[in-house]
Image 1 (cartoon, rainbow, N blue to C red):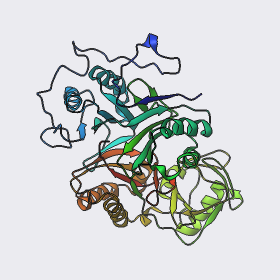
Image 2 (image 1 turned 120 degrees about the vertical axis):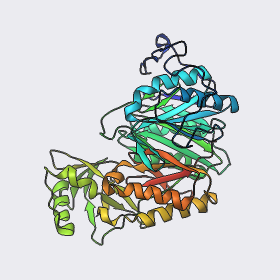
Image 3 (image 1 turned 180 degrees about the vertical axis):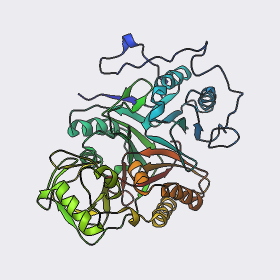
Amino acid sequence: MSNSIAIEGSRPSVPSPANRSPSEPQTTAPQATGPEGQWGADVLGERADSGLARGGYDSLKRFHYFESASSPQVRGCLSEWRAAHPRGGVLALLPERERSSVSPLQALCAELGLALTGAVFPALLVDGEFRSVGVLLLLFDEMPHAALCGPWDNADQAVEAIAKSVRGQVNERRDLTLFLFFDALVPNIATILDGLYLELADRVHYLGVNAGSETFQPMPCLFDNRRLIQGGALLLLLRGHRGGILEHGYQAPDTLITATSTEGNRILEIDWLPAFEAYRQRMQAQYGTAIDRENFYRYAVHFPFGIMRANGEIVVRIPVALEKDGSLFCVGEVPPNSLLALLQAPAVDSVHTVDTLVKGLNATYGSVAGQEVITFYCAGRRLHIGAQAQNELGELDRRSRAARIAGALSLGEIGSSIQGGYPLFHNGTLLCSPWTGR
């Protein structure tokens, strides 16, 4: 079954449980702590340190972080945005520890008549730091076309639902970006992207990330004003936008191996050997590291696979589970007979990564100095390079001279290796894009 609800400049309302359709998950109404409920009374005159605009939030800015998702200042910020932008909306990013805040946030936006979209991630990215609490609010001056789609039974249903929602909105304008938020547990994202490109080709740019729990346990993680779902996607069609820039900086070794048998995200055989046995042998021969079932989870994130594409691009696949039959489960599909390289953590070149990102942003949008830049940092990459993640973000802030860099810790990223090119599902990257508010 496929479900899709479009949101575009509407003044949404939250249906009562009695009026919800059976496919909509039940959400708990906010607990009232007074006449105005959990989100507090009218605080339009109050200011709080947002963590992004130090010393108080500036309602003219489009990014605001609040250390508590239930802070009354959230109401103040959204109320001011609603007054200043009657046709506007908001994208709300929450860390998984704050997922219970989705329902009261839906109720608040419904009360204010403000269109809402959002996603739950392992953590937020704010001021070069990862935050496990709070809420990050991003303003749309005018709400773009948006839809919450799924869950689906297969990739064909997903492609049809997403393409149907977007098709009528795409015209001859070239600067449209399809911004996709997937539940990380959707098993066939790369196949869905292939199907979407067949439907939409280069009439849109492609940008996206995976939301959900870093434990890879099922969790509703995508929402709008009315629904909170898992197993689907949230889409936004951004106007006057040219997509994002992503980079991982991994360098491939000379030795390549072949994924001789795969099923979706699972690698069954490498060079005709059981996948884990071949992985173990290659680790020992290439890096002198002994790996077994006991230490697999300690080492695997530091030694991901790289799918080698014909144009020389490396698409990273991080193994996250070792199955009883010796197969390896990765974040993202691995096509049969893919040429693979076994990558290593120290090969990540942060200077190259940041330089590539900044040059790409400046070439695509002109200088991003003084602009707000939405940024997603792969959770696997953070595990992979440890404390260097903070250094990368600091260097990105310094070299880009952006007004603000904020976003989330993601579980996979979507982008193109060239401007207007084919969309690919990646692991291990940094993904950046200016936030234009349209």
